[in-house]
Amino acid sequence: MLIVQKYGGTSVGSAARIRRCCRRIAQTVAAGHQVVAVVSAMGRTTDRLIGLAHQVSSAPPARELDMLVANGETITAPLVAMCLQDRGLPAVSLSGPQAGVLTSNHHSRARIQEVRPTRVLEALDQGRVPVVAGFQGATEDFEITTLGRGGSDTTAVALAAALGADVCEILTDVDGIMTADPRVVPEARLLGHVTYEEMLELASVGAKVMHPRAVEIGELYGVPIHVRSSFHPRPGTMIVSQVPMENRKRVRGVAQDLDVAKVTVLGVPDRPGVAAAVFEPLAEAQISADVIVQNVSTQGHTDLTFTVAEADLERSLALVGPAAARVGAAGVSHSAGLAKVSIVGTGMLGTPGIASRMFRALADAGINIEMISTSEIRITCIVERGGAAAAVRALHRAFELDQVALAPA
Ligand code: ASP
Ligand code: MG
Image (tube, rainbow, N blue to C red; front, side):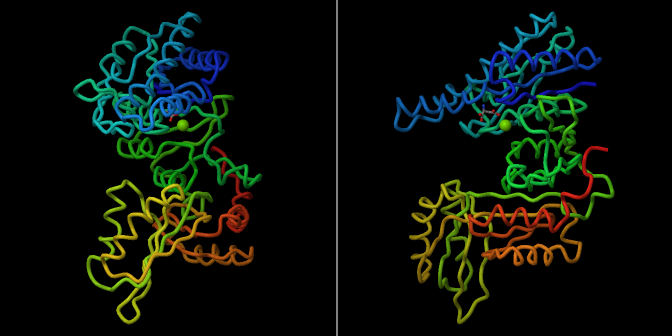
């Protein structure tokens, strides 16, 4: 098999940990597989580099910031390659650009446009383990770019797609994808499989195990992704297009996002163009507005409520205020300190009784629901942040997620 193995920052956080990762790579090769390693920056290196930048500049230019932070991964890759060589395993480190990662020119959030893995394939042909620096790429003009925080996952999956790898392993500091955050729900279980869709929904509502764009690329190119621990050999969670039959049409996980604030535009005239006028300035400022609810119109007026990350609240209010005035709204109100709790599962919306069971569980736990939104595979309730943990526990129990054996088959 051809396996892309991505090692995250914690897994390569020290010399000893790098040696352990290399032992694992060597074991995988010894088992008869071809391995391409993709590595993150060691530990908190990226944060440290960003911190340094802000100490010397009040607003570090995006281009220079990319030139700086790309170095975290540039350090790890040769360390891993020389460690492998020291074990007697031929290896070669490659930067993102050397590995053929071609991106758009949006600094700090570049998108991979194409992977031309000529040098990776050459190394494999020569019997060497290519060790690729994650997170970084280059534009056609050789400008260095990075893919956004957590972007090494995206490098790994995109490379796996380009190479036609059999699997992309995301080796991380957790055991896999759980039914809930085990720090909140001690009886949370490991899921043997999730679908790409479920994973995307879980990621978007706070299960920050994988970079969502990596999951999107995996789905698009049909790359099986195996999220597993780098600290032990047990299998983790396979992200695939279909989950085994008995696990369909049921709730698979409960997620929470504690970083939520809401904004309400009061008394907006009920006519075309109002929502566009409110949301366009947010979009231009790259603020994503989430759960959006508009009331039924009474006497030609309605309220428009949406959520944003609390960190974006101030900026959102500065943009929405003037927009609301322009469309003749009565005012803008807001509240912070909220959370999203969501249940996720393929085929959920087609299954009667799931929504009512969710609302009953929250009611019995004394938790007030402020807003509700649904997708085909998710129901989200906005609640007070202080009640979020209790809500997650209540939902985990209500859907019996602690009772069914969900571990790998
Ligand atoms: N080093 C980058 C970050 O900390 C990318 C990654 O680790 O995936 O965000
Ligand atoms: Mg990560």
